[in-house]
Image 1: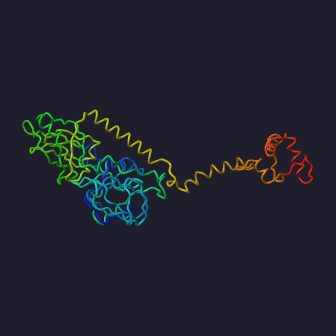
Image 2 (image 1 turned 120 degrees about the horizontal axis):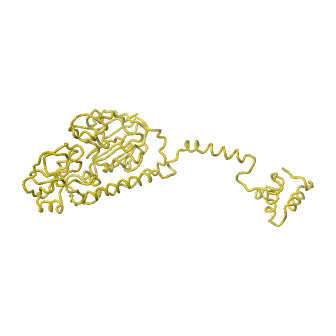
Image 3 (image 1 turned 45 degrees about the vertical axis):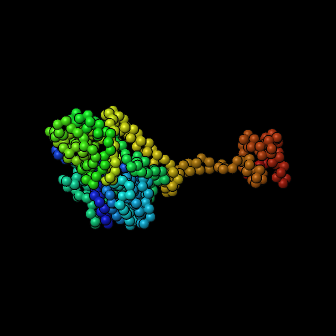
Length: 409
């Protein structure tokens, strides 16, 4: 069970949440560039939150599946097709054995993600993560990007169905603002902000910057007005976080990303709030970016709000839906319930009111009732005007000469 790489696309690799705890030893964290798209992809196929996915940039791969499974595609729009038919993004999709999944060039955004139900591709865990470290050549699939002919085995669950499959879809995420010419990302002031002049800080927060072609998983170099420093921006090297905004001697910002180095010797004017990093990495070259200052507390509240959104989304995609029901599993669940009900009502009528039945088929087919309940029911059948004794007499009189004290079963 797995998939075969027909065409590798651009920079296609296996990534997860990242590799933490080893920056002190010089190892980058790696992991996905767009954490939001990654989380949603795994939610849609009900994977564990840290399950690995395929990440690709600018142009996607072509894949052939060797077994039936369920997938989800999130992130940028690559015009995906399955066996020539358009494949929706942000939805759980059933793919058959032998199906061909094709991605083209990115129509919007830069990074796309493919999640596979059941735990995704089966690759060994290295230092607590399955992410690919391209510089050190470990993790992921043989420590490199995928190439033509690679066969990736994956772990899949019983995929005759996915519970409530019809609910496992959402509208394409409006968070990114792909239709906008300019996006604003929020920034926490950095540890060396005091090395910049007031005019430099004002420039950074008030003027737009443009993404350039000098961008990859390590960092995005931006073009725009120069950020003025007091006495230069060189510092003794210190640690670099995901989203740190360095300002080298030329005065233009560089945003450090997933494959960043662990330390750096340029002053950091700020750090992009975690929730807004996906907005930046999904902007293609030539896009305009503005920065907005927020406090640490505000950035933390934004992160908590995003976590609540993910919780609500997890509930939404598991809502009961008709096209997500498995007939076989439903039958297995209903069988003991129906058997119990049948035993309980074996000598009784299930669907038809006794009195209505007697009225419809005639008294000769009347069931054997007790003296109390049967008399009341027969009274209702005769219009509700007779007593229990009168009902029995009436029954007997209408039985072609049968004695009124006898009941016909």
